Figure 1 (cartoon, rainbow, N blue to C red):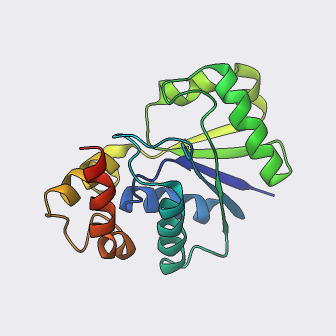
Figure 2: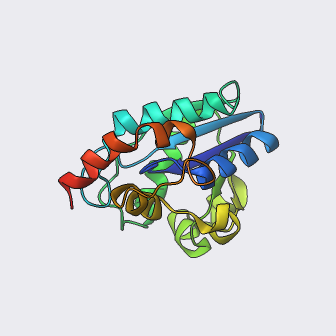
Length: 181
């Protein structure tokens, strides 16, 4: 079975994330969406994973992508700056345990150098394919940091940047952002 994987913190989900998920759904029979850093609450990760999961589920359903997707959560192995092969093996074994097969494609929008540093060459040659969608081509380079800044400044547009569910929950999200301001 052809399987795509998306790993993101979704702090919060935005249209760039949705564009990656749509691309993965178009190119695969099944897509595993992994909500990362579920064990962290900080200025960089202010929204609890339970709320992030609720938003991801709603956005995926609202865009009719739910039939091909499975959403799961993953704690960090150490910290977010860990780009070691230990992290890559941890992620790889987690994904294999969820999809019950050893090969898949990871869809991402971060730097090529980062994601290739996670996996040793033999996994990249034999099991893990990569599909890059450059961030600056996704929704004018939208990022979760930009979305959080817009929410804090009360200037999040209703369309074009985030799914409707994030716009609708912007005051709840703002309350979490204010905790770490």
